[in-house]
Image (cartoon, rainbow, N blue to C red; front, side, top):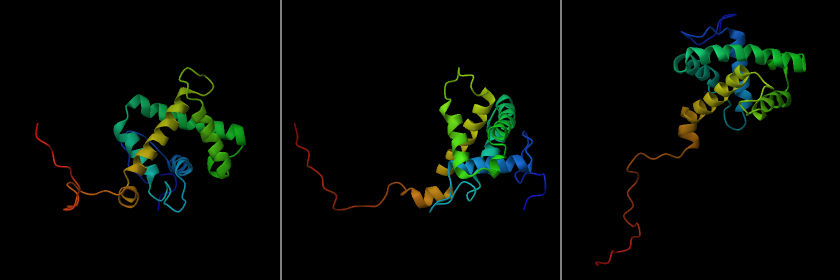
Length: 161
């Protein structure tokens, strides 16, 4: 259980509080919701996103992420007069699809930092999911090389020249 105000993941370069961690978790859960398969929160993908942000991104991108997070929070508050956590699923999806629809880097409809923030969360959520133990063991059928031996495999005999 997390302390009030403190994030549950230890980060060296990025200062995240519990509210911000929850926001990242809610966005990740909106991207990969729980159905008959585990959702992003079930697999702790929000913690993966934050750890990857802390370990693998440049200082400028980390600052862009933090600025984008504040812009995202303000945009949600301005549009719906609620926090992202208080929105129903349909409005959450609508908000994220609106950011995704503005893919043109020259577009000034949305701030660059907001696009960076969402891009990092979406990319690392998908990356974390497709590399998770659940996905690699339950969704992907994987056999170690060289695989199984099949003595009755059909072949054609080569003819000499």
